[in-house]
Length: 126
Picture 1 (cartoon, helix red, strand yellow):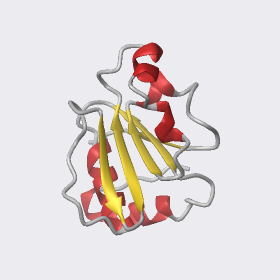
Picture 2 (picture 1 turned 45 degrees about the horizontal axis):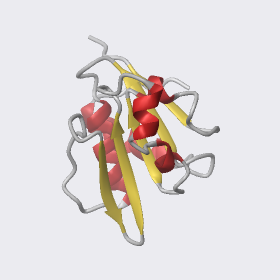
Picture 3 (picture 1 turned 30 degrees about the vertical axis):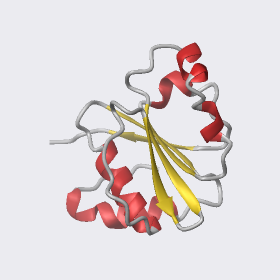
């Protein structure tokens, strides 16, 4: 499926993507730097009901947000250089937590992420 949207449409796009949560709660996002991965994830977290202040986990690698009795896991794997580094950090455990998991720069972990998962590739258009 291809969805073309602008920032004005991001709430609707977020709701459409979250409407497929019965398939999986894991969302993998790819795209070049500045394409809007974090912005889409922030909107999705707000649509899920999180009231936490959201920020990019570029340096922390993982941010965890409250969602009632559950959590939302937001990962940014841009700085992870190897599968061993990912495993040593225990990040694989999040994939099986049953929580919503949003993963930016997912490609380093794609062989470890349990299927099915949602794959969202974001491209900027003029």
